[in-house]
Image (cartoon, rainbow, N blue to C red; front, side):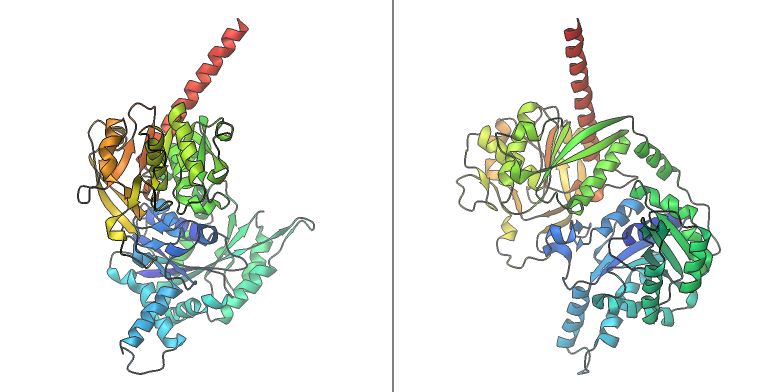
Length: 549
């Protein structure tokens, strides 16, 4: 049977429960244990698929097609494992299951209540992965903040599991905040005391307290927290702000978070953590040899979490190329033909990001045209690939009104059209083309060079596709469909062979990028941006030399 670690949070949201959970999992994995992480979210939505990116950040898609919380991206990036539908559960999904059972008569006419029916379903889900027999340790992150009304059923389920399971099979890690008052030049422990008190009042007592802080915690502070929160002093963990999230596992190793949890779980046999690859990656990340500037053309740039996986993929690819990737956010809604050169000035590469809806579309198309005509390395993902297709149709094929039927249902040239199987669907949640699908790559293309193989699988999340009725026109004019799904004929990759680097993909390569296995497309894109930057630098140096002479 697996052992269970629960990670809760107090004082405020966005403290980084997901990063702490992923860091602890990484350390346990490095010591030889099989570990997985799951996220329990307290909102009533069935999944994040229909949530606005401004509200919730990106929607992360797993191999099996589940639309999940963005924290699952952290789990996969840290552990290099695949999560599934079972790794993310919301209040909405719990209630939906219980109500369906009640409608089917499973409760034999009993009054259905939060306790025991809702909490029983939560406990069942919490132990689902642990009962598969594949994992030694299951880490469960409880979303929200202790004290929130919506979190109470989850906390109650943890309390019941602490009572039902052997004491050595359950550990609770509580993440909290130690604010630093600059006027008084003092760290304050009172918010943490209140947070732990609130958690204890629900019947759940933390075994470890992880303290987010901007200033180091001295022994007096740790002793005070331990005394008032009823934990051992060595179970009070300092979590200082780090320069990168990938440094956190090493900080937690130094604080012995993994050892403290293993002691509570009565794990006595383990090896020293193997983190050589992780440390080598960090060295490359922290000490780059050069810098490239990449433009991220999107419509949700005000919230960084909306493009979380893309930004992390840039970090992974930057480390592989030993460069620092500086990302410049450019709002597509404000790009015009008159200002595009000014908006994109100084960039070494351009990525047009995914999205939905008509807002900012024309700005994306103008940006693609600029990259194509100026020889600027271009990379389009999902909607970004579709914008590249529309731009090519308008300016090369001579179809000035070409568009996607998503934005213009009456376009005379629907070069992007709704997928046939999507046309009869009326429900929004979980109905797109989701999850991992195969792609066959043409030999001797840029895609083939990047992947080094002819068959790949990547994750998808879309309703619209390239209209194959126009395929012959595109290919006879220079745009190659270098990747297709053989079963459906769906065009997965388009590229321009006569361009330094121009590629668009219908899928989301950022969803499979991790520290140890960076996404090949991102690695190649950053390599092209690096080359562009070096060429640009050589040209400037040459011009300066001529002026001096």
